[in-house]
Structures are given as structure tokens and as C-alpha cells.
Length: 49
Image (tube, rainbow, N blue to C red; front, side, top):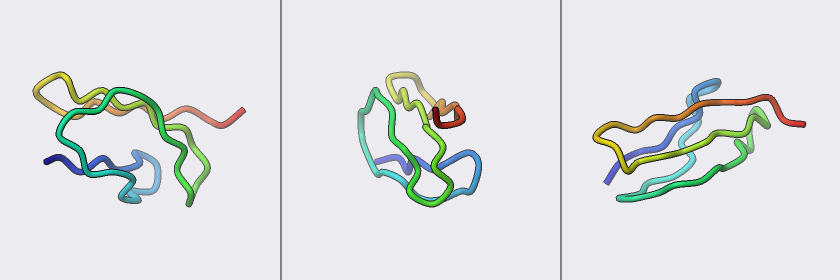
């Protein structure tokens, strides 16, 4: 189980074993793209549109 956190404010967004997608942080309103198919969690944050 991996913790998915916002890169901008470190808010815990999700705990998952396998996840591919995007989630919007409720605290800072940034969109976090998540891909846990690799060995490490690779999140990238983008400003909301």
C-alpha cells in the first residue's frame, strides 16, 4: 500500500496498491497525476484550469 500525497502541500490524497489517473487536491486545488505502475510513486502537479 502506497500513500499518494500532493507535491505542493503534502496533503494525503489516496492510499492505493495500484492506481493510474488524476486527483484534485482539496486543500490547494492542484491537479495531481498519479501512476503507481512503476516501482516508485511518480506524481506531477499541475495548476488547475
